[in-house]
Length: 454
Image (cartoon, rainbow, N blue to C red):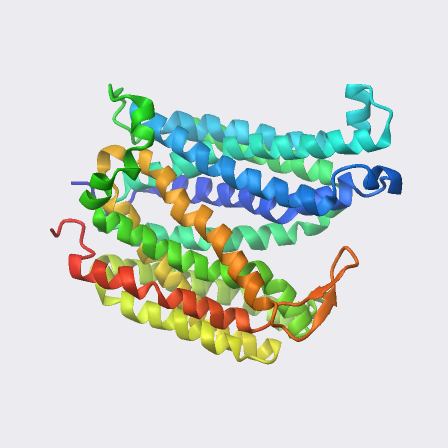
């Protein structure tokens, strides 16, 4: 039985690699679209734009191909790491290659494309450059999913157990938020010089991978398995496997519903705040006072401490003691937030929503790790990606887009097109989707959240 306390080295690797992974993914999610628009398309002649790939088409294609690459990669590499009985090499070397491919974006430009491929036609230059960005995004995603989604996530499952996973998940739940804050703080650097920004970020990720070569202790058994590799790829889809691991798939179903509910409103949240509630980031930043600057880090530290404390309590008392109140907070939080008619009211109403979100994320992520077969942890990372990423990111935004069409006001987007602004109805729709989580949760409660309980 593993020790219930995680040592200093484990915490170091957990935080460093978890944080850098979130930094890299946030850059892709937040800046690759603007990189295409502001750097690749900006300055191109009207003739080149008219006779090349439309920017919106390019962005949607890049997002779709990247998501598909992430899922396929996690299946392939997660299963391979199980077969080889190793995680460290995929994490450390993967981060190095992830950093290199990220840094490559700093050298992609129309001028470089024209020089390398000896192209003079402006439309062809733009088309080839956009294609390079999309292809390199898929290559970078392959490296990122290899090291983070497949190997690192499997490693976290390996080094934790049912007595400390909620604590570990509470820390991992904080990292995406901190990464987003850091990336937003670097917005000026990115938009001012994408080349330096990507090279700097890539170098940092490379250094992280090099550190991992010395700091990470391989959690794999180091024993090569003789099971057929391609047969194992489809192991998680067999009916008998689903039945045998019913609590795992119930946990995955709960995560899928929860994540889909979040994706109903999250892609549109900033547009809603800006155009629906009149939120102005520049105005807010200009009015920040010294007391606010002093109080902000104190509040942040307090929130982090509270989340970690909740993780420890969940580990100590059990998930079944907190799951009901978490679901209620999440659903009611969505409904209340939908009634907010100002930014200040929104910030107040969103508190129960964020509390329910954090608790559910901690418990459901821990439950998925608890019920994952110990000898096939890497293999199930691909299955995990389908429920965590693929389904929610496809279904959620579609639902959000449909319900937002009932909005009564419009706005002019960044491309000068008048379009419907998302309305508060998206929060009510998200609550409706989120309520479905009760179905797998009830079954989980009956079967038991304790992995040792039959």
